[in-house]
Amino acid sequence: MNKKLNTKFDAAESSPGFLFWKVANLHQRLQRQVLKDLDISPTQYFLLACYFFLKTPEGLPTQTDICEMAGLDKMLVSDTTKALLRKKLVIKKIIKMINAHFMLNLLKKVNLFAIRQ
Image (cartoon, rainbow, N blue to C red):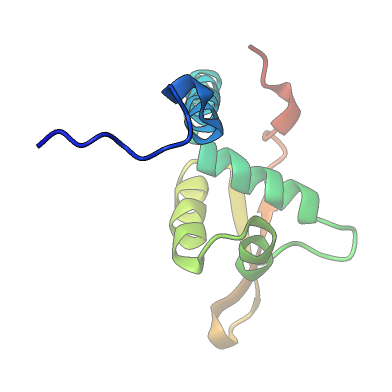
């Protein structure tokens, strides 16, 4: 019962979806290699970048701000932020005790653009 896949492409290498998958995997592998020395995951790096770009002179970003910018769910952002807090890459600044509202700030030692290959 060996059915042939119904596709308009003669070979996998002709399929844009297959090629995109290969490039995405290569990109992730290269990211992990560079970030390995910093002991952070690609998701952690992505959130650090969000914290960096959302920080303004008027205020610091909240996890909700990060969720909206990154397009990620609150649980993933929360778990990743906890890991960044443990690694002392971000700090928590409580601004209201009601609803445990807080803002996050990057520590000065985090330099997102100092990563070299």
